[in-house]
Image (cartoon, rainbow, N blue to C red; front, top):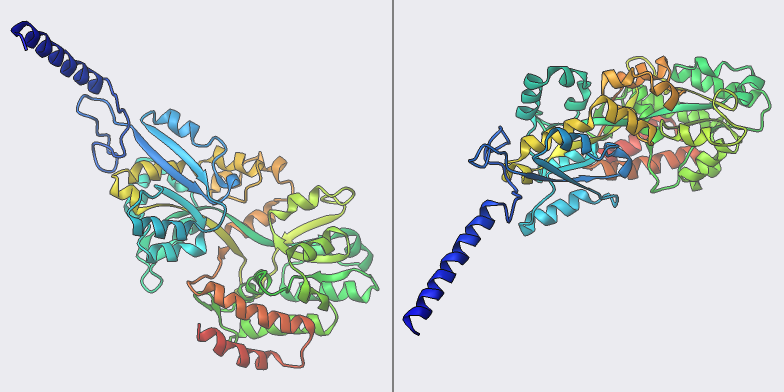
Length: 448
């Protein structure tokens, strides 16, 4: 090569190097999976600007996401980008376990049933949120103090020494009693005044004695469809639980078994419900063929859409009745920061995204979109709820605010199978006493 040729080549290489440096400085790759300061403590890229943080969030249902899809959060935090995916196959736990084993990037935030959070914690998929909770309380005490204590307390693990907090449950569904107003009026029953389990049983008896053709209490007893009714009543009667296992031998346990035995023996439960799932049980009430149903709060919207069977004329609603020290229970969903976020140093940004879900406007707007009641004291008193949920009166709000967590444990699925068998035996009819049923089924539960 001639000298002049070498000179041209060297100049070209120098120009190429300069162009590459300029492109890099201008942000040819302007995103980063980490912040300069671990945990997002306001670090920057060395030139006074914050580096971009990309958060991946998995929600279990679309209606549990904040209605603005974190746009307001991103507007307030321009260095944070949020991507949200709805994983509605109820297998988020299994997916994260596979991703962890494969060394793949996990989502930074997940949302799932609260009763599954212990399994996440046992698998090492979630970080302890205690430090994040304390920092939030210090930096934004007003927002922090709006969150009901149960939102943190029911996410404390491990069960034998609950010192860590592995998420925050910002919303929860809970069971209520729906009653058919015309049936109650014809039977002379003050259904709106039902507050105790004994009073509820007496109301069902009055409906039966009135000669009404309505089923006093519609239930589902088809194996594999869940046993919400029985668990709710065990809690309402004050039966203690060991994780997900109720103490059938306790006073509250025996009372609950006798309650359902009386209801079955007196013809207050439909024996054909042994083949009924959720749709059949609800259909009996929605079709005005039943006086009562215990069901989730969210079903009220569906009942209210039935022509000629609206709130205040066709049906009413009261909290689930209790006895003694018993209480209502609520079934929550938890938002939690994963160990993946911690590994990337973005756990604080991820937690702030969770906190955005729990703000008043997002929770109230979500309610309008079909979500469930919130674990936020200010949002629970928001006047907009009067239009969204006209049935959510002071009595119902008080019961919800004071509700306990659904008894849960890692063996919850197996426990349900045993309780389904027990409930099915009661529904179809049995000569066994409450004590005999407890003696038969308690050992099966204790072995799980």
